[in-house]
Length: 360
Image (cartoon, rainbow, N blue to C red; front, side, top):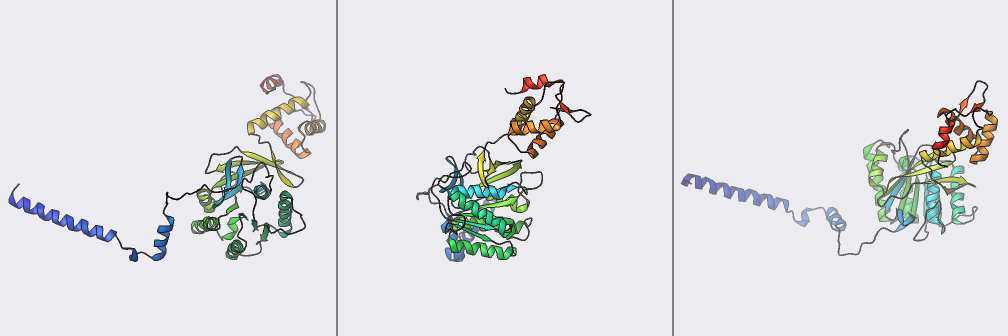
């Protein structure tokens, strides 16, 4: 290497050291250059594995699997008429009752419930309150210190949010039902508002060591929650459940869980309360429909009137007239029965093949 080349390389190395040294000094800022609130957040948010950090306490569970835990929020998704409020009542009822509700349990005992309604009229909210008291085994004509309900339908979104947060500070509840969160902001499709309100729910659930269960409407023809609000909630929630009404039964599907996913479940309404019922898949429903049709229909080529077939279906299936009519219509559309010009019904000639396909 020539003397000139050595000189150039030496100058380059000196320059590199100076550049790297300057970068190092600039990036290593002293503590007093960081905003005190930011430094506090840095210290507070760092994970310390030397401490014993327990799992979040379960407030509502499915067997041994967590559904609603302290420090988290969950939500129910569904179209109008899917009995979302009944589902929330059942989940909250499981928290309130020593015997649980809808097959759900409260493994760590009961506590204080705060229910915030933003949608329904006073009379409908009163029905919810009485249902909760019945599930908890309390008088329905007296107020309870552990079941607190507020109705915020008449207020504007920003004021609803103020009342909501003030109630939490006032009552310090263990479990909160917010029906529904979209009414705390003016535009659920606004990404900034959606992010803000979901961050509020996360902060409240952590700071007050409670669980928040809320409701978001679904997009028509989809199991997805509506708008930016639904997308943001799904990313940050502990649990999401899609509710779908099928005649007298509401099917509940797990959209998201942070633990092992429990089996899907279903409930129906008996004496005004949500109770667990068998969850039946679409294929099982189809098999059941064909089985009932084969039992109530006379052999081919004999016919039966619509009135007699409807009465037989109601008796065999144990359903109301409207459900029988709906299923008979489906059986005709699927080709399980045929309607003649006189308006009577008969089995198709291939009904023997249908019998061989049935699981009995």
